[in-house]
Image (cartoon, rainbow, N blue to C red; front, side, top):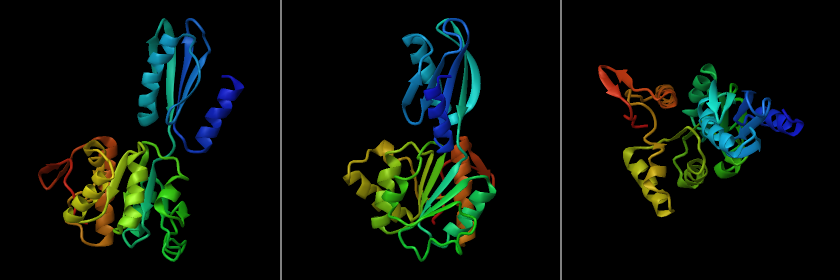
Length: 254
């Protein structure tokens, strides 16, 4: 690997940015590398435009799914590998539900970040298990983070002045999960506001709102459990079966 390419890969991994690498192990240009750094930064070559184009299609999938593979590409035997950062749970709004949500996320191996412009809420005393607390407006805070398919973002702030800037940033990224708390009426109002600001139905359909699986959750802990359940289900592309009913998109009324 060329020194500049190695440095770019190292820096991306240290910054928790997904990276996918293709290396020729047999055939023309043996030893050459092609690297894709999220979202679309490309370095290196496999020795031909055709090989690069075919490999990049596979590398884009690996930026989302990780894993490794061997493939025949344009007369070359190519090893491909995705390097993904730990899953990241980003919570906007340091409210009561956020406390057990951070605990569940931490237990399940997620890196956790809590964002709130109100410093009296986003404190170490309230969130001892959080990896990061950011006291800033949502759009400012999200701009500091690596937003990629391994990120699950949950907006627990009911106020549109917090919620809408967060939705703008998240819907313009490729994060794997976007959830927003609120009743069905509140969710419909949110959708109308964002549609009026130019978001398409496809973009708005990414929002899981009301957030969480419909398990009859009432307490902050139960609502947090419902949210984490939905995040895991969406991440793994699974249908959940609860009380004999197959559920793929049912929501709580949180």
